[in-house]
Length: 471
Ligand code: NAD
Image 1 (tube, protein in one colour):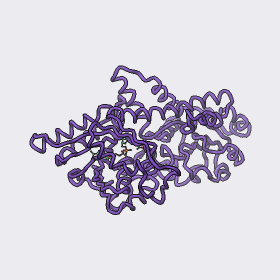
Image 2 (cartoon, protein in one colour):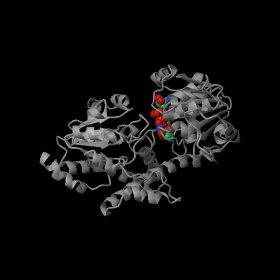
Image 3 (cartoon, helix red, strand yellow):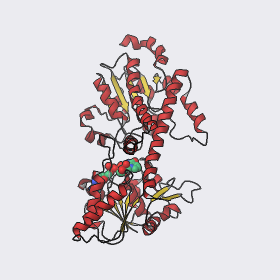
Image 4 (cartoon, helix red, strand yellow):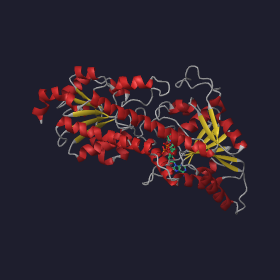
């Protein structure tokens, strides 16, 4: 199949590389000239494990351009994978999708084309895209408006950090399409994934026992809703365990054991049940907001999603409140944040809790020290006012700190020389925002351990050994 991918971000680039690896001819188009220049030079503009290797395995089937004329004419399918950030009212900003559809129509040759919305877009977006493409095409062919075009929905569920794995070994492929010929095109595009007929890339082996991937073939509106409902549910699961975590703290229960006991129920499942400082990233906040905005447009409320969002906001506040309580105020305290990306194995900083926490600490009069193993270059470029607080290593973060906060559970942080870090700090307090560290090991290293589910009162012993005196 000849495929055009519009947008070479986390989704578009991964999808393009995977399709090309599977044997399709793929042209990726992006309006960002610097991204395309980087890609043409063989560099990936994003950090995503194994993506560079996969691109290198594509044997000339993957190319990059800023020119739609090199991507669209003759394509069997054109996937739109541009951003859909939130508008202030919660609705998805469709301006990038509209502009991609406009450029697509202006370069379409009128041959049979399946346009695929891979971007997360509100219900009804397929017909919106079709109208824009047809109008743009009409302007180019003098208003004749001919040509066979269908717009399908193929939502994406990949997780950054595991994007290649999730793209070639997905839990399911969802395709919403109203035309049989377009359904055939999309089936041909996904056949190697659905039937698992490809040779796995060496660094991303096929999960044992996987021989086929379920296909959910449905109408366009259902496919569009599946994406929002999935993200809504995942957000809910995170906030649910955080609610239970807060209760666990009050009643003296161990949230890790509670989550394990709950998650072993096959109806519930163990994933997304780790209590902590809540979700971040480009999707959950915006997709839950869009879900609510869509419901409102149709005269409905979704209070359960509203609550999940409120809980998530509160989890971030909890970090500030607990640190303030533990340190007797934040004015003049020095706090080191370990981890800036919204989760490990990505350099994505969109809605990363680190940014809000750093800003709130600074507003409360604290000094911050920041580190991330991978995302510091992006952080420097996107968060200029915080860039001066970046440190080259955790060893540079710790000296003189009153507390360290594990914000992102990067593997690099799980086995730090905690004893050395504790010695360098003014007060060895560690706030484990992700319940990723072993409290006993930290205690042995000299740390006093705090987490979203441990009460500050558990530090009372620590106050006696110097915290109060040091205030
Ligand atoms: P991104 O911001 O990383 O990438 C978007 C790309 O589109 C950018 O490179 C931008 O330059 C390009 N672009 C913008 N307008 C363009 C145009 N008119 N023509 C060509 N290129 C254009 O975004 P992303 O994270 O890849 O997300 C893309 C979509 O996929 C969003 O709707 C998102 O909600 C959805 N999604 C994202 C993830 C994720 O984990 N990132 C997962 C599932 C779904």
